[in-house]
Length: 290
Image 1: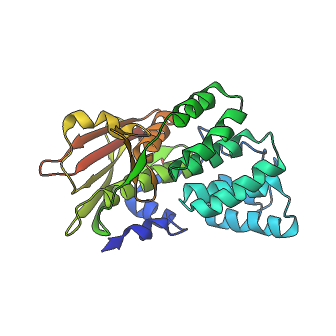
Image 2: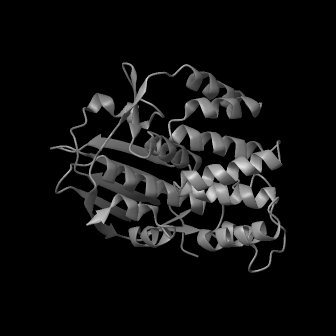
Image 3: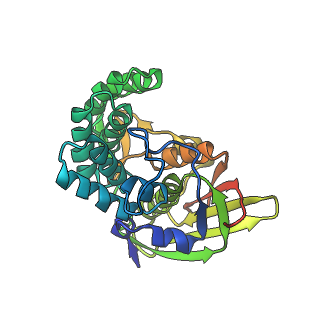
């Protein structure tokens, strides 16, 4: 049996490798928004480790920098970012707040701190951060969040589920950290929204002849009406005076997955399973292994 907490282990790349999604070097989105990496980085340089996808080692490196200089805004920002992507909200809030305080113009850290609050359903704390960035999209989200009221509805799903893997090779080119988060969110969502007893999650990866790779995650769970599928990809679902919130944060899991897929020029599809549950498949452009 695999509990929910298993997916919050710091070294989640082991699961990613077992799932068969190999990520080649390269990036489609800028990850180091708060400061550029040196052109020639030493092997122990945390920015270089971060770019290579060695996130546990990178975080250790950033923490070493903070021990030497607690006012290192970039190191604080990166520790907070890695913590956020690992769903360690307390650590993320601590370090991202520090980064914003040390460097008021750090838009990326302000956005990530706002996301940290939103995912914990602390919308009022996110609003001033989003308003401060000067970005029209952030202002629109701030306006949206400021008008949401009501008591969060906590979902208490399965405490454990059996995970079945059918790992085939699936090489793609993209941002390693975001693609790892994509797989993590798909599996975590499938575990959370499952039956209380005897549930399972199936993870499949494969390469298709049309030069695409696919990751498919299916699960047992409650029946999902077909007309509800589009709303699953929205940041919030409004049910009367209640907001739909997951057990450990706002319902952003599939919304984030969709954003990552679009950034990598891929496609995502969800369909109800007969008898309950959901099948979510992600297709991305394939590449040759390096």
